[in-house]
Length: 282
Image 1 (cartoon, helix red, strand yellow):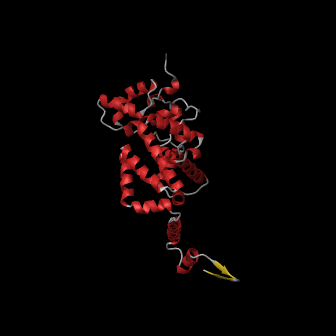
Image 2 (spheres, rainbow, N blue to C red):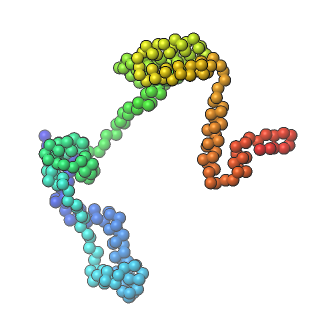
Image 3 (cartoon, one colour):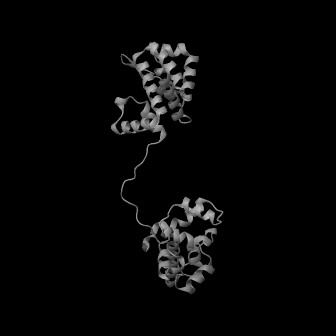
């Protein structure tokens, strides 16, 4: 079966002069040069001197004189830099026509033939060919969640997961028993704080050490070093959330106003307004 013509990369030697001219006319720099050439010719035909044209357009009189003598804008042929891949062009065209459009795979194949460059050069070399390839499918690509997102879903309560998140969690737990154990321990740790049960915390520490998961064992070691504070955090309703929130607010205000406001404005933004009768004091 013959390959689809859309998959065959264009041969620069087979491009007609008309196509080259059309490609150049679409180039912004060529359009700018042609517009300046037309303006110079129009000014000369109106009787403006070469010196005045040179001063008006910022060109040398030699360039203006050349424009006037030529009378027709000459298109500049596109420059094509030589590349180490030129010697492998035939093989690349063959593999491209066969449907191999992966730059990494092409680079590996070229290395077996003696090519010493990298993948980025191969990708840059075949990039113009992609414009002539078949259009991309309109079918929506399926994206996979990253590891951090999966970890977030694992630590969420099952009732708070969406159906999609629950399906992903079930698939991961079925494929990785150690992750399933970690998820079970994470849910138990959540219930310890929800129920404010310090005895359950002790049982959780023992079962976590027995799980033999290195990351969780290090977490248990940190809790045991400050067990009394953690136990108090489980039993007591007090929290340092307000303190941390105010510290975060102060840092945010400082960074917003650094170098932009004085002390009085900063004081008014930091301290709350209290209303006593008709007076307001910062």
